[in-house]
Amino acid sequence: MSDLSPTTAKDEPLIQVRGLHCYFGEKHVLRGADLDVYRGETLCMLGTSGGGKSVMVKHMLGLMQPDEGSVKIDGVNISTMDERALSPIRKKVGMMFQNGALFDSMNVAQNIAFPLREDGIKDLTKINERIAEVLEIVRLPGQEKTMPSDLSGGMRKRVALARAIVDRPACVCYDEPHAGLDPITADSIDRLIKRLQNEYNMTNIVITHELRSVFRIADRIVFMKEGVVYWVGTPPEMKASTDPVLVQFLSGIAHDGEKWASDL
Ligand SMILES: Nc1ncnc2c1ncn2[C@@H]1O[C@H](COP(=O)(O)OP(=O)(O)OP(=O)(O)O)[C@@H](O)[C@H]1O
Ligand SMILES: [Mg+2]
Image: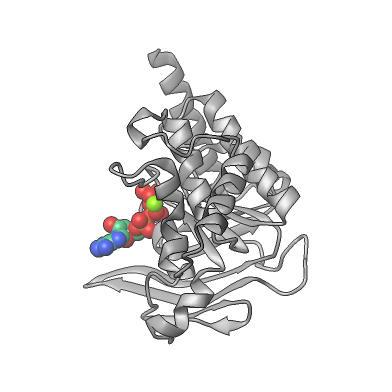
């Protein structure tokens, strides 16, 4: 297992996870996970199914409280905070949920405005400006009035991303942003992720099983296994690794890909 120090150090971590444990009843899901996320990096999380990636990210968003250990955002320990104290810190980390999670009864603009209204922003001009701004960023200008049912899968994800960044978070977490997308649409999501990083200095945490995307967008890769961060490194370090767990995982995915391709 490689050490957890960053290979491309950038100041102090934006998010720092230490000794994180999480139980669901008898089930010990996170078993002492440690992770540093640096400002302005794209960090991809890979791992075996059920290894704890989504649960880990939920802790980093403050949606779950650790049973043991701590999560610091911008140096502030959020693990013991109550809802009220947590609210301004939670805004630093946005989330793009797996299936887009849009409200089908609301149009695109209303969906995107949702977090702003929750913040108590009432100035309609300001709200509309922010909606137009984020729709521009996700390359969907002028789609304010469109209903989610009229959007393609890729467009839904882009609207979900617009909603995740409308609050101007420092970091966005994406849970399987490529799931259910064809390769070309998946590429467009990758380009957006990198655009947010390069043009807006956004920190990206991307949980995905798409290795093609990982090797294209990741500055660092985190491999989770059985509730711990098993390995951290850069894409070239992962490709060169002889760690049997990584080798098996990577070849397993490659085989799945071949199987998928041969099923066509
Ligand atoms: N609310 C919950 N109640 C009970 N068990 C849960 C809950 N949420 C997650 N788990 C369990 O925690 C473990 C880790 O789940 P998690 O969703 O973090 O895995 P993952 O690494 O994201 O997997 P996948 O790649 O399949 O999405 C799994 O065994 C899962 O069944
Ligand atoms: Mg998951």
